Image (cartoon, rainbow, N blue to C red):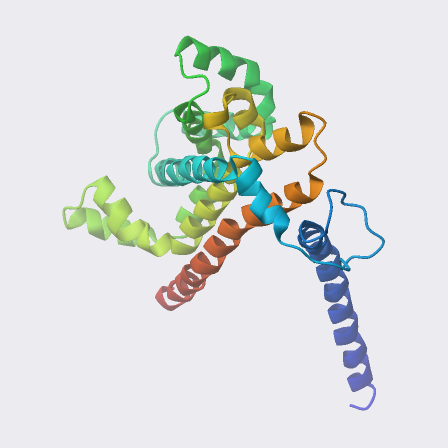
Length: 278
């Protein structure tokens, strides 16, 4: 016993030391951006992490000098609508592949998986031409359509989760007279809360911070999103408002952080409920 205890202490100390180092490396960039947003002047360079003189003037300048409020509303509108439809489409696609057996099923799954491996920007030219033919360029609807249309390629995670749900529950509901949509929304979806929360968070974060497709489609001042607006802020007219840019980055993180904190409860509750039912 006397030889085991020091060994265990060394092991625990090593694990905690490693976790602390990883935590510091992960959180340092975020702290650096927050401290930069409070720094006086427009330069991000500083000899110390903590500014000698802190100011919130850059947060005021975001709304006074730029259309930051409009960019924020545009991004929230696109992200919320896209997240709802993306989550539903991913879940339904995963449920279909998990429940039904039809000709060409494996081929279709393989095709979607291969398409999901290609970088999204490979389809930029085709997407631009299609949207131009439909007169949808420079509209939020175009961005939402692009996000939602590409979401089924992420079906595998949902399918893998649905495969773990006992088929007896679905068959019992079918015997009681429930149709396929009824089974999905009343039986399968409530048992899949952790996965649904995860997919919704992933969809919202991806659309809220996306720059490539938003930059491709949106060009006017009224339709800009946060990513496009902040990029233009520091690349046009020889601008040097880098600290204002840092303040914008901090504000972008707020809804994502709040959403994660709110949804985390449902994620934990869902995992606990799944354990009780299992």
